[in-house]
Image 1 (cartoon, rainbow, N blue to C red):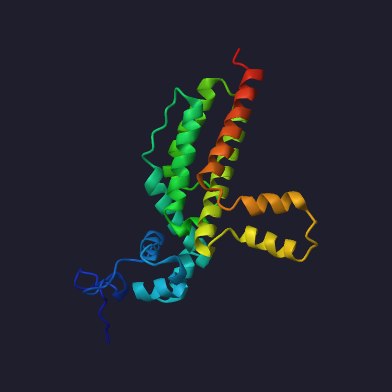
Image 2: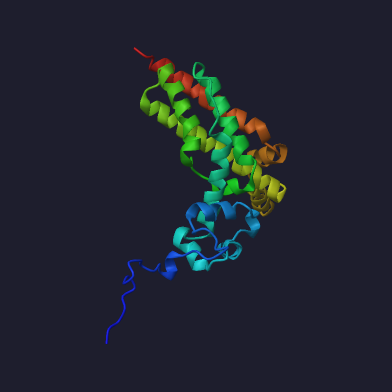
Length: 231
């Protein structure tokens, strides 16, 4: 008794796993997961919600993204890159390059509450203006260490400012202010007079705080450059 081979007629039969049925969705990928996740509001974004919308098991999502926080970060970073990848800085004016870079990054971060999940410079799209800023600093005479530290300090100031503004919008005021008032309320009225005065008179630091940060950084960089001129 003989058995026929699948290729006996010279044509191998395709395996079921190789065929895509009518209407079958495209193969799952990290990019497709991020694109779908971007359709949700941050509060509603979960791995299960994305899996349901894509029509897959949640474990399939976990294969590409380990958890909700990572997914939120990826969506926020994509939005940030889209807003900053075409930014052009004035390379012949390093103080203005700092201001343009910082305020543009701040505006991009504040455009979405997802930015609360961003705490680093993500993707090549954001690294492009960062590269321009470093070039402006190097051309002005800063050495590589000073340029790198300046960029780090600027980004830290912008991220802190944007995060504070978003938290204030969400809670009506920055949570730190509420906590300070709570602590002071448990102390005698004469305790910590400087803190009481400052936090009773300053309610909304707003744009002024970022301006203060930037001008302080620029002033410090200018002094550093004066002490170490290009020779």
